[in-house]
Image 1 (cartoon, helix red, strand yellow):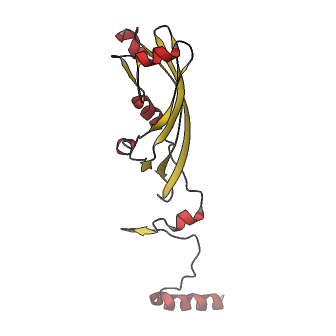
Image 2 (image 1 turned 90 degrees about the horizontal axis):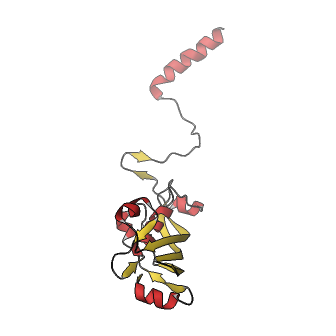
Length: 175
């Protein structure tokens, strides 16, 4: 989402500059290995001009696919992010590094880096699949490991130790 300063100033002179659209952020899959896939996100908001500052207030809604922390199955994770970003042409380089205000370079404002940054900040530490059916589709064994159930199996004694068991029975009879 790119906007020219002239376009924003022309509309925002009388009323807030509004925008609404879908943005493809599929390159986030390559940037963060927790995100398996992400659909195009919907971005809507407004911009208010206050002197040399452009104040953007927008909402990002979408859905990303993340791995379940227990079973590694795909879990859809819907999100809705509200963001406020301020751009200014009158920010010094020293002041720009320490503040929340973004400097404007040229005549075009690009919201895409900020949209991606806000989505990456929204990725949760871990998610869990809600349905038991998802766990049935999960991996039950791999190279050198298997999933064990909590059921206690009735184990038969080792045939080599059956003679010792008979000695134990004889000992108990003597007492």
